[in-house]
Image (tube, rainbow, N blue to C red):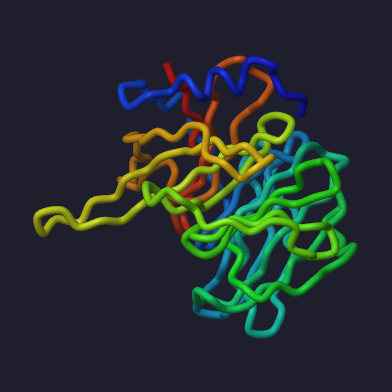
Length: 261
């Protein structure tokens, strides 16, 4: 999926008064578990998800009708919590972190080819919550709660490690939207005056120095009430406008297609 040259500037123009509209929904014709990541992969979607009761981590390929057409089990012993993912196109490999279901633990990072076959893997001494291939021979990853930001080689060597200076949201999923530019989507659960509040948002990061160049809250929610940034997302980069797709609900779920104006 090629990227629009205007997409980065459009995303960085988003503000707290941006209006979000739900254009359509694609119901998923299967139990999706507790989804973590969503990415376009040609005409299909790929979803990373965890089944906490059975301690299994899966990657699902879902077609445009919402049918699950392929399932891959990526469980690695005590590591069964897959994280956020990003695919640049139908012929590109996919990287997925599979971690223990607790912070400050360990992960196995798995590389899959376009047919979802395992190509390589490496261990990581942290819980990685999301990862993406930057297309320059390196990877970008975030820890549980996105408190740590990592630049990694494809063999797992840590090339850069920064503490996330922002506490606005915890990044749940990632997408490369331009050369050296990553869009992170996520939520923050807070209690204000005794009331539980969930705030969604996105952040744009420059990979040269792992710097946040723009972040903005998003108040839109799926019909279930969950923020559209609660878990998996992807932006359709074929448009010079925001076409935001999300999969945030457990078990019985749908991919929501949103527009920003």
